[in-house]
View (cartoon, rainbow, N blue to C red):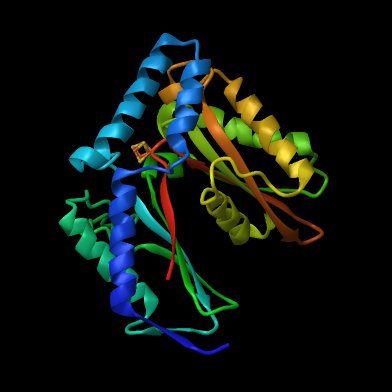
Length: 283
Ligand code: SF4
């Protein structure tokens, strides 16, 4: 395969367009899931809020006001083909410069701090992004990006189970995580679950699970069944829309699994709020 050159100008332009798009538009499947939740909901207050969410989705792109005031941390999963050469500065520099420029152009709220504990001083420009890079076969550059809000991220959890843990223990851990979150994660939720790998890879799997289409199912039947069982149990908690009661606590559950050590069974639960903003671009 011949080497293919991709200019940094092309990446900047495509990324800026993608960022603008997700600032005003959620996952394309989200409105249908919210409408179906509305049809199924019995709580009057949850129904009212679901209608507000649908109206918000309709208005945001028209009047170019962000879907949520929290435009989040920019999370990027980049896959660089081994025959793709980026003509320009290193990819993280391109991503961060584009993020800074686009945040200023769209008046996005600065949400990132230089130091998490001591100074907590705002960088003022939404950089740096959280970037995960992997090298794959091919001559393309794939960028999966998301604006990940702080409220839902804060309520996410990771637990290192022992190998003797049964499926029910994992299910209970997810339901407990959602129950502890109550309205703080801004339900209805999308729940990303990573099972396997080690301490850090199960967290990455949980995050990556949120980048799938909302109707995606795990290709392994038992995991696909578990996704549906967890969704049902979470919706039976009665937490409801924004924690105000009702049948709609989550819209989708996605599990990603990976091999792990014989002594381990890591599980991470990454909660995502209804402001589910992500997109994939391939250059
Ligand atoms: S958790 Fe989501 S919906 Fe709630 S404030 Fe943050 S981005 Fe907005």
